[in-house]
Image 1 (cartoon, rainbow over the protein chains, first blue to last red):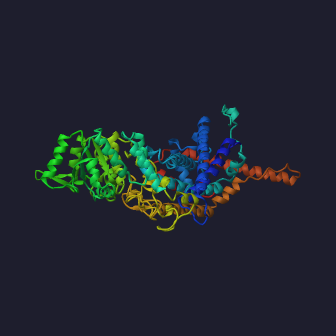
Image 2 (cartoon, rainbow over the protein chains, first blue to last red):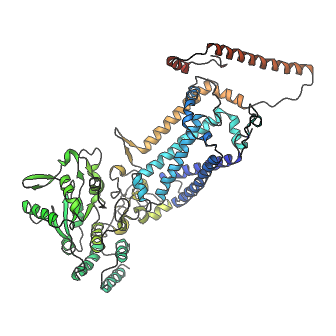
Image 3 (tube, helix red, strand yellow):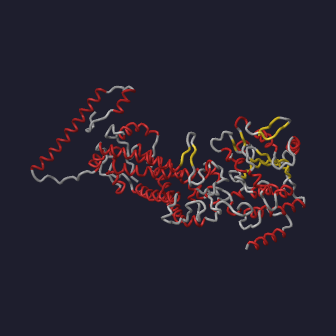
Length: 204
Length: 430
């Protein structure tokens, strides 16, 4: 069964490359390790390049999910609240199974929603820091450039903290789904044949 | 080089018979090659304009609220021409508490007369933060008929009648040091109190004499200067210190000072140049002598809207965050959150290992491949055994569901809470 179509895989791995580059160069720009002696200009150039890739990628991803109407699979919506009970029971080791939540469980949806918000916010903050002279109105709404710097720092910390969480759960929860992010396929057939039940939505 | 520049500038201005155009004036204000003080260049132009009766000297009332008088001292520190030439040739200074020739009722009467007779014509320059706590009674500024008048009341009375309201210094612009935590006096910026009209902000702690003189000159010659969203004149606050800095190349090359006073960019010892809009690097202080970074001290961001709370600690890159309860160091907070996350993931990992959850996921997540068809009787028996095991499992599942259906009824809230914490055994049976 095709779990992760090609566009999703491309978006995912581009995101991996862009975000890891951004976090590493961002931390270097925040606190340059003088032993390494990288040129700040070069590091900032790499940071900007990765940021451009990220911006294109994140808007492409949003367009894809809205166009295919799959955003309900990745974004945490009020309807997911009722799933929190079984989800928290599972993560507190009270039950050993979870019901079928669809492609992602409520925790994953919450994490991806927070990531999307963080990326969009950091794009706004990044623009303010890149063009400090032309975005004074923006700085005023966000309480000054230094506050914007703190926001960006905490966004960096958010990724530093949640990427290991993501990796840990990906490696321990479901190895079959992990390989699907490489190959796209999962070795499992749907319980009912979609063609027989009139669900003719094609995988895009 | 220096001398040649001076000469060209002088020639240029001698050649100007009429007033400078506005564009030329702004270029002059923003020029990074000037070797004379801006004030020095402006005065002949102002005198000429006065002589030709093109402008009139505006009456100015300069009131001081919650202030250390630092901006007046800074203004007074203009050396060539000195402060007295400045106020004689450019402004008609009617009241300034520090520079009054007399004191007491006479002076106050003069000021009140100016406010009444020159209403809509006089400029109100405010220095110092507006003390608002207890209706401003921490800050009395003069006596009127034997009664003390608070700064807040004076500002609210004068501001609507003034032609321009100009806030000078960090305190008057956004509260500044007077409004620093815990701000017991309730200090605020002028524009937080006078909200219904434009207040020109000239921040800095103190403001550079040129920033004040330049803005005043623009007001006299051409009216309101271009302001940004913080109401700062763009000609002085248009670029960040980082963009104009002498040590910018060292930043780009990754050469950093580990302590104040060392060679190299002061980024790592807390320079707030990247987040502060001002032209200190080209203008420099004390008659073009020096400025903090040139002297080896990081910029503390005194012209920034969040000075000083948003800029402290001065020698750290990221500022502290002031919450209602405690002051948080950003880096330490980040580290604490990181440690908490690591602890939570570690606990979960330990529980997963001991609860054999990881074991289960790897066993389930990796399916064996289908075997080839049986070749002998033993292999057929093995297949049959597997089928029977599967059948038994399905049957027990059916029984369980039937039992559950028979017992179904509405759960009480206490029951729901109890169910939440009810564990299952390893086979999933309740």
